[in-house]
Length: 337
Image (cartoon, rainbow, N blue to C red):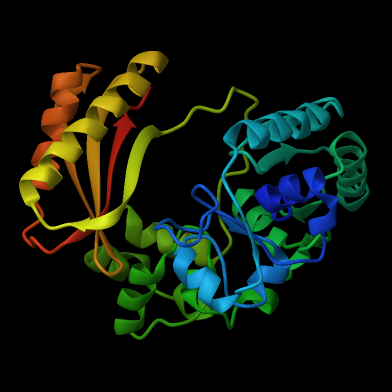
């Protein structure tokens, strides 16, 4: 199993269009104006050295790197570059499962996966001038985590043999799929490292995390995961729209109106894809920068705009605080097929 991850993808595409920016801190986000509200979509490695990364407010980024180059998001350019990369990978004859603009899993039958990885890197560079890192593993989890150890533009193999040597002493949120909140909950149980989680009793964790999640956490810490790769076309799990407001909204009637507007836009996206929605999630970012989400399951799979809007408003109703708001978002999650 190989995991191909394009290096600083969005920034790299922009630098290809503007070679004079190579080696400089480049930050892409919003409409490219750091005086406005918005967040960083991606940052070049030079910008990351100063602590700027995806999700950082643009205004924070410009304070940290006043001389950085700020550019607007150009989805069409990134989609075109991504399609060229994935086409180059498929031309090598492997099964390629696209995971987004900048990453894919590739199933390989080879005694020398490093040689295959180098061939992939050379092919992608020749076709697009973009660089990538490649992780090698026995399954998706190992390959995905291995990629980070190869960045930038390198290759790393992570298998059962070196799993604990590489990851054993790391915190549990170093594992793919384990976030900060889960790591904090595990720490509260005295489990702070990958090794400790791998040694935990799955049934004991089931009592704290649920019958499915508890054992999954232990399996993940042991490096166990699916090794399947499919070349079926990539299907998004949902569609979302969000807006960052240049002035805080402190009138919650307007908040409700904005959620309705966003839900209607999402309903148009859903209609274009002709896939029913099972759940709607609302995101609220309070001023200055605290973000929360609430979801609402719909009565049944539907593409009805009125049902999607009603679900969004019901999810909004689960927010009890009426503090000023700087960002709102609505996401429709598709029903399983």
